[in-house]
Amino acid sequence: MPRTYKDQNSPSGSRTLTDQAYLQLRSDIIHGELQPEEKLRIEHLREEYGVGASPLREALSRLTADGFVTAEGQRGFRVAPMSEADLADITRMRILLEKQALSQSIEHGDDAWESQIVATFYQLEKVEQSEERDKTEWEIRNHDFHEALIAACTSKWLRRFYGILYDQHKRYRNIALSTEIPRDLHQEHEELRNAALARDKQRACDAIEQHIMRTAEITLKVLREEEADRENEVDKVAAS
Amino acid sequence: MPRTYKDQNSPSGSRTLTDQAYLQLRSDIIHGELQPEEKLRIEHLREEYGVGASPLREALSRLTADGFVTAEGQRGFRVAPMSEADLADITRMRILLEKQALSQSIEHGDDAWESQIVATFYQLEKVEQSEERDKTEWEIRNHDFHEALIAACTSKWLRRFYGILYDQHKRYRNIALSTEIPRDLHQEHEELRNAALARDKQRACDAIEQHIMRTAEITLKVLREEEADRENEVDKVAAS
DNA sequence: TTTACAAAAAATATCGATAATTTTCTTGCA
DNA sequence: TGCAAGAAAATTATCGATATTTTTTGTAAA
Image (cartoon, rainbow over all chains, first blue to last red; front, side, top):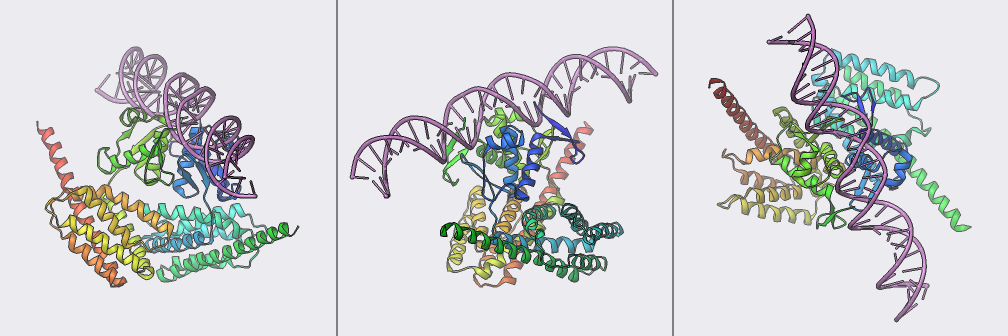
């Protein structure tokens, strides 16, 4: 008994319950509603998400492949852990793949490619320079800008892996966004735009590497502060 | 009602029906038992593999994430297509990632790493120099050798993507293996071993690039011949 | 107090039935 | 002959029930 919803984003214009559960679970993991290493019990999720066991298991299987969930036969599913080492790994890989994709795009991109960079940068700039920083809107426009930068990369596999890493990093990125550490994001994006439009591969690769590294440094700093806060909490409990 | 089988390879020593279906389906796709773009009907697979709809759907979802299957809501699953463009893409990506993994391993590898290269090369050499070329055994030992070469690469994500591409290429590799095009595979592997043991990053990267490119060229040649054969068949039918 | 074992409770993975969706076939009309 | 509409057949996706496995709890012995 299929239950579907019409959706503009899927090719057939419909979305199964599996798709729905997948997207909702993924969002909840990225935004920290579901904690690292938290046990994902089917019966609980069933009540929480209003979807039966079979579509839930399918969605969790997909999330396992994406790296958001870990699975163990007969013992069910857990939210995947987060760590400094994982963040460092994702960062390194993102740099490797995004530099590759960006270089290819600079080589192959045409006027339409350039115009999309200009357009997405314009929209991103608007949010970055507004008084109220709408984080959700910023995330959407940031994604669009980065996608535009690599849009002329024709490697299906590179795009797939890049997408996985971008999403994985989103989980950590949400942490960095909630901090007030000073950073001129806008200038970093502007340098990327300029280098790409100038068709300067080396400059663009340097800029993307620094951009990604800066995000990672800030996130790491925040992670460490939170770890220190959590240890202070533990000390207080032990002392009382 | 879980049905499981004790298996030495999984962490918990057991394997679900989903795991079983996944591995069997994957093998059948790689070995061409299931053809590119072939429709995968659940009821047929149910009879063929002796597994119910739910675990089958889970296995197919996982295979979709691996790139062996394509899925479309309400329209089911199909074996993923193969193409020259896909082979070229996989080849480029493999070169990028394997060079990276190999370089890291050369930097970080210790004596144990070297000894595993020596050991796996020895076993591979045995098969490559025997009169009877056992393709299945060769594939296992080839995989072990390549894994040993990159064993000191600590990037979890790089290993994951590399594994996906290695498996994807296996599907094309099976085609190249069935041909008699002359090639000194043994010498290529020997050069890799020597460069790695000499800790010569540049030489090793050159060797791996040539090795992977050579495989792709042969596979492409075979693919084109098969395409020509298939067109001759069509011509014959039209003439009669 | 710790360890081992058994029983109970909870959770997991799968099955077959079934509602919903898609595809195929048939019929009628221009 | 080709196209459109409707009906029939086939397929898909999901549900709730249930056998199996894992975890938790309770008890006894050292």
